[in-house]
Amino acid sequence: MNLPRLQLFELNDSAWAPPALRETIVEALSRTLAWGRILEKLAPPFREFLDRTGAEDVLDLCSGAGGPAAILAGVLARSGRAPQFLLTDLHPHPEIWERLREEHPTVDFVRESVDATKIPAGLGAGRARVVINALHHFPPSLAAAILRGACDDDSPGVFVAEGFERNPLLFAPFALAGLPALALGPLLSPRRNFQKALLAWLTPAALAASIWDGFVSTMRVYTEEELRAMVARIDGFEWTYGTYGFAAGGRGYYFYGVRVTPPRGA
Image (cartoon, rainbow, N blue to C red):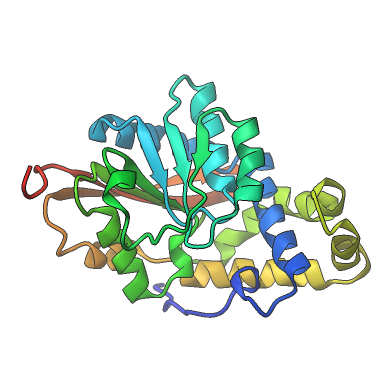
């Protein structure tokens, strides 16, 4: 059954939600991705994408807290393929990215704001572009603009990935690592620990917010047909869609485009 896409709100990207709650959700998700080894089987198709583009540098768009890109960078480094990741966002988080750079030698970041729909030519030159666990946050018109922007100029290719397809049941496998990540968050967080302890231990707020955001995320995710419609008018790229699995029956998707004709003016 094809479920309709719903552009509902997520608490983790709502400015009106308390900062401690937003941070709790984002931090728990990053730990869930790491502890649940959710991105490990994404590495093979990503390596295939890099091989096809010939790129050794990766421009990470809409990086947020940077967790997904840093985890994927670590998985690739352990397998012997370690491209350089450069984190960017319209609202950068240099204080968080600094810690990721210390932990992962192949990760760096741009302190200035970067609009994913209008990537500066010097910044994007020769770099493959990736959007990991982020495209679903944007409405269709903006998601399409991000994909077009990722294909502008001399882009060798763009890789998009999400941790699930549009099916609320596909969020359930996250619970295996997600519940411990949420419970231990106040002990592992670098700030606002007392507030996060209240949210996670003494009230149902953190759990309820995480369940809501997980449900909404699955209903915001784009289908293969919707993604292909967004890129239908982008010339010179060949597009591939596939899925990858992880623990407890989880399944995410990847969608990537590789340039097959030289950019205009080349």
